[in-house]
Image (tube, rainbow, N blue to C red; front, side):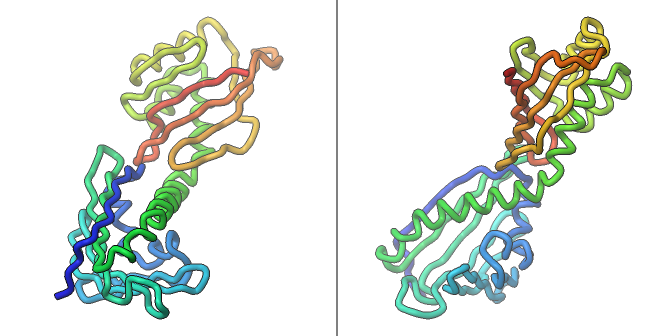
Length: 255
């Protein structure tokens, strides 16, 4: 049995549930979204793992263990050439730990040669960043709709429909902060929005540009208009989305 005494370890937090994250290690189509076209994985003991980089370099390995949705182990080595590790020359263990609606991912890559380990330090730092972004892009593909629903709730004078909208898109412990707001939780937010419509009747907020999104953080530009249609202010909202797609935090920046 080959010994793998040289370790590379990295822990990152992914803004998605454990079940969602684990899919990317067991579904070949999803595996390829963060490794590259032509990559595949047969996620069962004895199945083959293949990574095909955009420059044509290939990594292959055998799946050793699968414990859904918490753990997968596979060997890892270059299919051809003189790069290290060679096929079977290292072993990767991925362990997933639930953190509410997010996931803590623990990577352990064990090598036979220290010369093979060190070049992979930045490689995994980069690849796990791509991984987190790929998951977030898919999970939050409707981020613009979520932002629009938030602004619609602020513009809705009817308490029942406004509160139903907020409850659908916001986590129970949601926080909202801007120059005039410091609220926490749905009950506090509902009361705050009721006060908005009491003291500023007819006020509406609308998104003015496509949202920008990265790993669960969404930036949306807005304009606020009074009942006469005249502009009352504009700015940006920075939304933080949970692994279930709901808003957990909002910061409003006035311009």
